[in-house]
Length: 239
Image 1: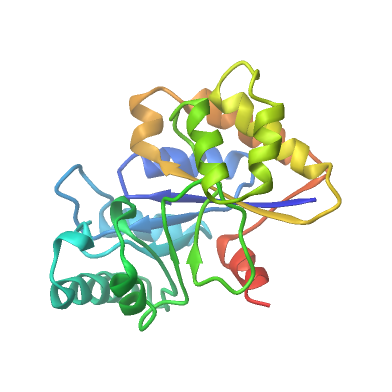
Image 2: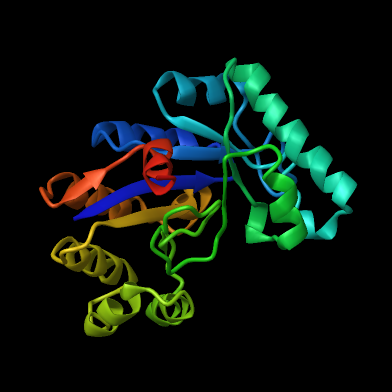
């Protein structure tokens, strides 16, 4: 059995297109959104509210999408707190989940973030969710990083994904390999928790919408798979 959740970073304006596709297949997801981003346009406050009003979860992603390892610890704290408060005041509810911009982190930043959040997601792919872990390491990046990256990252994370990925390495392409691995995990006796993450701007730039729709459609039609809200999956981790 596989329990899967989707997580999207950066708050790009293409998130609204991603929202529409997710609603079409009744796929929940969490959007980690900064207030500003020097790299690209981000959602307006009104558009963030549209996501939340459509029952998508919103997570913190610093205030200005800053790579925290480049800041002092005082500046990093300000970025975390200011980004969290921006979303909480906008949406009128607590924001318990955080994602490190660019996957940039160290032990000091992890310890700092634990003062403000229930969990913090990384970009360190190849993992299956483990119980009692504050750091949430996702399983797959929805972006063609190459099949070798799946092998390397799953080996690094000592995951059952490594064994299954070797068996499926001849799949036609990166995205089919991900699908094959996940469906093979469905056939094992264990319960596996998976997070697929990505950026809507990457999906737009590399014309991956058809690939994502195919994945959504395949997963939604599977009886061996449960598609969960991010918070629900995290709550199952914290047992």
